[in-house]
Structures are given as C-alpha cells and as structure tokens.
Image (tube, rainbow, N blue to C red; front, side, top):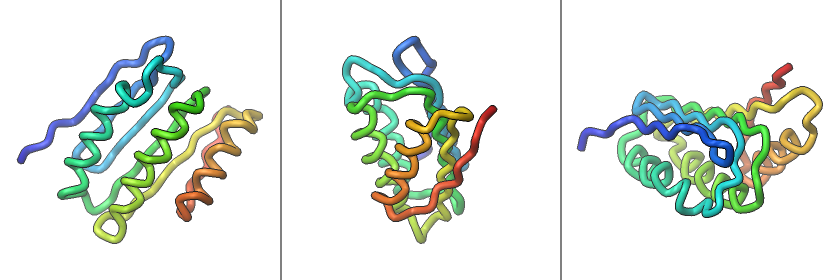
Length: 125
C-alpha cells in the first residue's frame, strides 16, 4: 500500500501534526482538544500503517507549548508505538521546550524514563 503523508492544521486548541513517509513526525503548538482520542486518531492510524514498513530512521519532534492530561496519555501511547519500531528503524525523539518551561521539560523527561528511551532535549529561546 502506498502511504500518504499526514497534515493536520493547528487550531487554538489542537496542534499542527505533520508526518512524512520518509520518517519524520512533528507535533507542535497547543494540545487541549475536547476529545483527544478523536483528534489523534488519524495520527494513530498513520503510525500503525507506517509501522508496517518504516523508514531506516524515524525522527519524532514534539514541540508542544501546552498539553492537557488527555493529550498526555495519547502522546505516551503514540510514542510507545514509535519506540517499538526499533530495531527496524533508528528512532530519535526530539523534545522541544521553551526556555524556562520546566513543566514541559519535566513531562518529556518523565516520558523518556517511562519509555526507557533517550530523548534529545532542545531548548528554544
């Protein structure tokens, strides 16, 4: 099956989601959707399809300025699916956070320990 890239435009309550079959996934903005499961369903399906034949390298860039607990659960599930691509794909997770935003940094650190995967932390000034 030939996969398409996925693009979901950002709104005031939902992040921009961009994926590429070449192994790039980016989630950026705010994530406080009314129904996180429904919002992230297209990305979940895309990851399931991508997992069947992943690129040699998969890079995930998470750059959320704020996200709620519903997003937190889903994000962890999606990241776990991606981490499971190892060793078929070299998985790199970049966790971007604004300078001084300890909450977002700590969430990334927590996810990193739960997933037993090293994240690359990128501070944005």
